[in-house]
Amino acid sequence: MNTDSRFTNLLPPEAVCPGCGGDNGCAVAHDQPAESCWCMTLSLPAEALNRVKRKYPGSACLCRDCLMKLAADLPATTA
Image 1: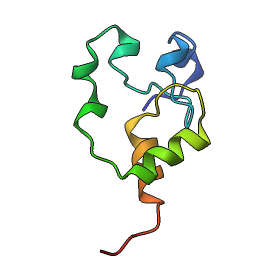
Image 2 (image 1 turned 120 degrees about the vertical axis):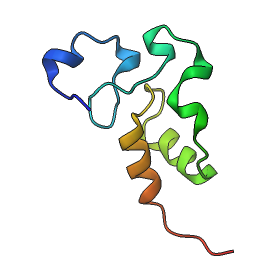
Image 3 (image 1 turned 90 degrees about the horizontal axis):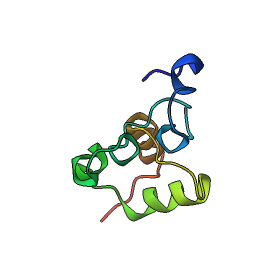
Image 4 (image 1 turned 90 degrees about the vertical axis):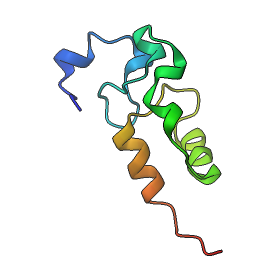
């Protein structure tokens, strides 16, 4: 993940992760088909997605590292 501002200043706003300020790797933000995006292969608990929406309302997508960190910080649930 490159968070060097000289690099991220060249990115469109929708390609910058609101968590770390680096490239979020969003396929759509880089003019690629949505189905080719890394996030399309993830399966996250609903609470992880809800936490993203609460913490970063109306912002760009998180990068994989920030999303995984946020999901890992969720309390474990028992079945």
